[in-house]
Length: 102
Image (cartoon, rainbow, N blue to C red):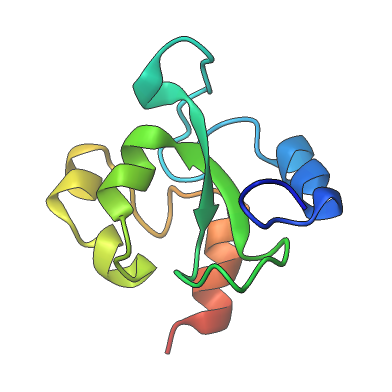
């Protein structure tokens, strides 16, 4: 497991899958803090470390989302200002919305 409790096999899979923020599609940067990749639990539960719940997003989106449920966050001012919605997010997030939304 890595230092965030994510199994290494999941970490490798997610790093191969997520090359840009799963929410705003910003390419990751190692030098610009807001654009650094950060681990995201789509469902805000650190015990769920499956590949369908773990993703990489930029620090800016992660800070904005915090512990808000995904559907609530997608309706936020932040998301509106960045044109982030159920249609624009990465497929892993769309799959989550389809699977877990009422």
